[in-house]
Image 1 (cartoon, one colour):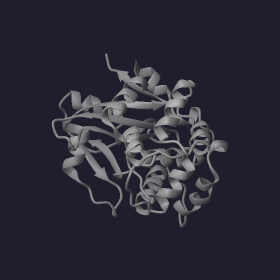
Image 2: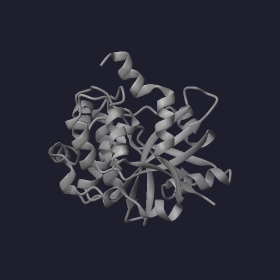
Image 3: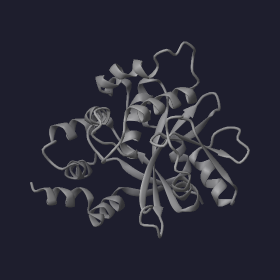
Image 4: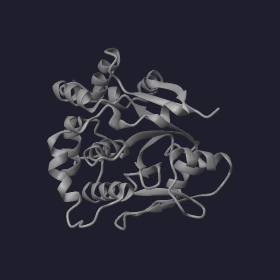
Length: 263
């Protein structure tokens, strides 16, 4: 298959938009609140490479960590050991191997591998996307981030793994969930963000544009069965990834983009 055809299948805006519409649906807030990645992805379904690397994330840690501290530790290790690059869209094992080898990784790839590290560390996790509409063409498109559930705070907390960020109200107390952030935006209240990784350079303007000032809509990525996607992406690796994703859609095994209805 020619390079131009592969690019067309992977990146053409029209095909991307068609795919996005097919996968998107509106759901209730309760549906979103009650879903987490761990519901359909068990520890036994996670590839061995995650277990092999996991001790490196927590080496020299001698004390018990809170859920949020564990999530931050995973996010810091990923950001400090992966330089990033082109989007991958590979199986979870291949994506992690390529990212560690310096062969790529965008926000959605970071979210994908973060999900699996959370599962094996007994952290409840969700993966979110943010559909951004802006007159600025560099912002149009989207961004991926996660939420983890903190037993200590008894709530979900938004964590941006690729940018090492947490979000807070103007008087920082407890980190925000995505619903907290949306509500504060709707009420024209100020929102702060904080980088928890000293090795990360924060682009404050871009973060503000993406999360706070832009016209953006969050959607939850549901029904992503890691074991199923890994099987098909590896077995059919001679095909462009969008073709494999399309096949899974036709088989009724695809993930979905669920937009919570606020009213």
